[in-house]
Structures are given as C-alpha cells and as structure tokens.
Image 1 (cartoon, rainbow, N blue to C red):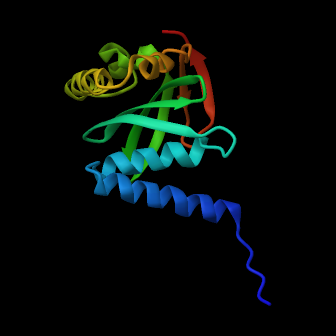
Image 2 (spheres, rainbow, N blue to C red):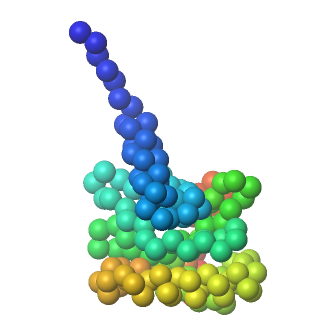
Length: 153
C-alpha cells in the first residue's frame, strides 16, 4: 500500500495557480491573475476564504478590491520586475487619486487607476462594494509584507 502525503501549502498553491489560469481563460489578463495570486497567497485561509474582485491594472500599478467574510477593503500593488507586491491596504482612501499620488503613483497612472476602479466596482452588487469600505485607514506594507506605520486618510 502506498501512502501519499500532501503538503497543504503545495495543495493550496496548486489550487491558487489553477484559479489564476481559469481567470486568464475567462478573460482576465495575466497581470490581473498575478495580482489575485499575490493576495490569495497572503490572505486566503481555509476557514476564511478571500474573494478578490475587481482588479484594475495600469502599467506597473494595480488596485484590487477584496472581501473576506463580512469585511473587505482594497489593496494597492506595485510591480517590481516580474513580481507584484502589496504596497498598501485600505478602504475608501484607495479610491482617491490624491492618495495614490501620495503613495508614489504617477499622476496619469493614479487617475487611470481611480477611474478604472470606479468603473469596475460599479458593476458589483451594492452589498459586495460596501464591504470594501469596512477597512479603516491606510496601512503601508514593506517589501516583506509587514505592516508599517498606519495612517488615517
């Protein structure tokens, strides 16, 4: 009899990769799938499933809405080479073009992200969109994914 051992981390990674491939096949871009993958790898839990929608990518910056249970928020991600990293988490503050510029996003990119996010969120159910507002304040993340000094918008 052969005993097969599954490493839960490997099983979850494979599931996330499959979800990303399905998203690409369903019309999402490779960048959108990569952004989803980063958020899922960081925050998805078997007991608290993460939903990532919508994802808006403009150049090397992305905004993503996320929901987990009754809570949610938004994340700003930046591409460094071929890797996406979470730069900031927040609620309604991340819809603000000025906040995006203050986070180091070029003005044209910040405007395109804010407009794209507004358009993408408009197609979501009201109750789902409301969860994005439950994240209070803004939280910067460092390159290791650790929270740095929080500040209120």
